[in-house]
Amino acid sequence: MLLRIAPLAALLALWEIAALSGIWPRQVLVPLEQVGATLLALATSGELERHLLASLYRLANGFVAGSILGITIGTAMALSRGVHRLLWPTFTCVRQVPVIAFIPLLILFFDVEDSFKIVIVAMASFFPSALATHDAVRDIPESHREVARLYRMPLLPFLRRLILPATVPQVLTGLRLGLTRGWLSLVAAELLAADSGLGQMMEMGRQLFQIDVVLSGVFVAGLVGFLLDGSMVRLERRLTRWRAA
Image 1 (tube, rainbow, N blue to C red):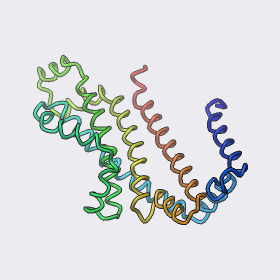
Image 2 (image 1 turned 90 degrees about the vertical axis):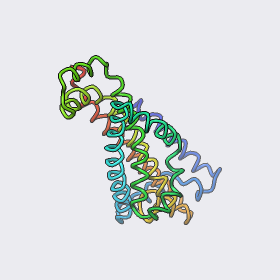
Image 3 (image 1 turned 60 degrees about the horizontal axis):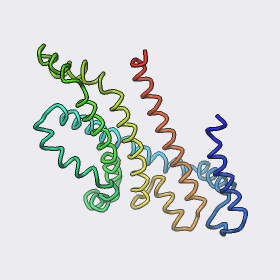
């Protein structure tokens, strides 16, 4: 446990030493105690909770929508040659473009309301889940599919009994990556155009030159991302426990 937190402790120590050395003005490199005091004040006033809940609401909606669509499209492309030929070139091309590059276009369509941020998260979550699902289904041995076709297994039992058990580990990995990318894209979108959320809180701190507010937002964003990733890891272990048995 000590070895795990040693790099973080060393980074914080270097930060504090640099802040107290006077190399940079305190308005630029804020001491840890000031960031801690600001974070406590934001939490006590309810401002941090308001921004955090707004971000988590957008993340949850966008992640669920993007993941469901990604799993559906990924499965369809893997099982149908026609769907694969139709969608794969466009899918491959669009997924190479950073999601935040679509922000100006999405603002024109959705303004700066919640819909725009939810769509950004959905797009960021869609591609990892779709690609992971596509590859997982394609990796299923053809002999297994032949048996299913031989017994004329209906679609729903085919998906539930063959596709789902064989693809769970890879799909969960795709969902984990999609959740991380969704969170990063959301904070970036809120930095550019939002009236609430962690990104907006940091942007307002930047405009007012309140670096302690900015760093408080950075700390909370990192902590939330860490907790989300850890939750996905625990879920993955629980759902794939049968593979180790």
